[in-house]
Length: 184
Image (cartoon, rainbow, N blue to C red; front, side, top):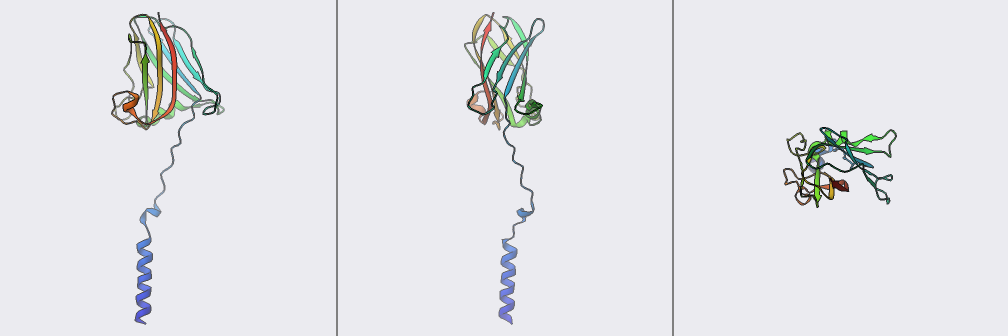
């Protein structure tokens, strides 16, 4: 009888020890990356016509390259208020991904890369919930005439704080678009 009690006690101890309290926890939901078909950057001067830079990819992550358009030239010696809109137009109606990026601001950051535009400055980025750069709104200031490219890269799960360069920001790219820009 003592042996039966001993074995029953050991079995109960084994079963109890093998139960993990984490089994009762609800698993964390998986935050899937956003499908972004459209990136629209609207640059609005204090006076004059807004310039719109648009990247449209009709198949999302598919094999087709995005179509890039720029509605005009930037004026020299001008400050533009910039705003970025992100859409998933594979959904009907189109899903506004900008809302999600702003809601999950600490998990996102736009990186701006200028090439050949030494007289253009991008600053005054809006910030995330921790007062770190987000960049869905910003200022773009032109000084002199010239031409080059500006690249907008949205990073998911960036390292914050960072120096604003792609190398330091880290994370994964949600969308990237490079536009030819002329300043007159």
